[in-house]
Length: 228
Image (cartoon, rainbow, N blue to C red; front, side):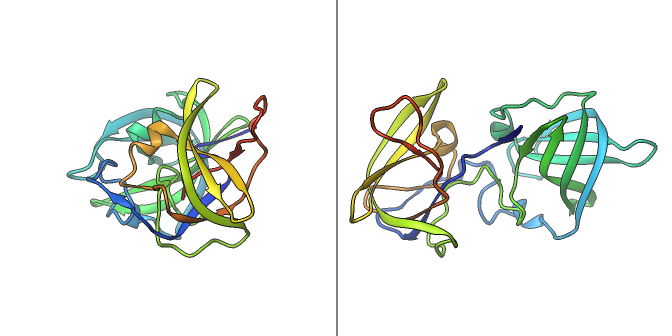
C-alpha cells in the first residue's frame, strides 16, 4: 500500500489575481531556495538499515530538517535528507532506527559532504513520497504563474475558500467556477497551507487536473486535490 504526502489532483494558477506574498514561512525550504536547487540527476536506489536520525539545520540559516543515517550491508553509510522537520512530523508512516528501508533519491553535494535527497522511502510494502521524479518537494503546494500541466480537465476561478474535517485532519476546500458549473476541490491540509510562502486567493484563475474520487459520506461531492 502506498502512502503519499500530498493528495492527487492539482490546481495550477495560470493567471494570478490578488496573490498574497508573505515572509519565509518555510524555513529556507521554499521554491527557489539554495537547498532545493541542490537536486541533481545523479539518482541512486539502495537498501539499508536506519542507524540514526538527525534533526538539525541542513545549511546555515535554515530551519531544522530530518535526516536518516542509513547503512548498506557491508558498504557505505549515507546521510539521507527527508525534508523540513515541520513537514516530516506529519507523515503517516514513522521511520525509526533499526528499520530496514529502500531509499530512492538524488546524490548531491551539500556544504562539502555528499548526501542523498530522498525522493521516496519504502518500508516493507509502505512507500513514503517526499519529492516527485523531477525533484519538486511535496511540501511546496502553492506555485503561481506557471504553465498549465498536461492532462488538464477543466479551468475556472476560485470563488470560495473554506475548510473541512476529514479523518481528524482539517483540509482547505476551494470552490471553482468553471463557467459551466461549480466544483469543490479538497486541497492541502491547513497545517501545510499555513507554511506556504504564497497562497491562492479568491478571484484567481486556475487549471484543474488529476481529479480523484469524491469524498464519501457527503451530500455535496468534494473532489480531492491540491494547490500547486
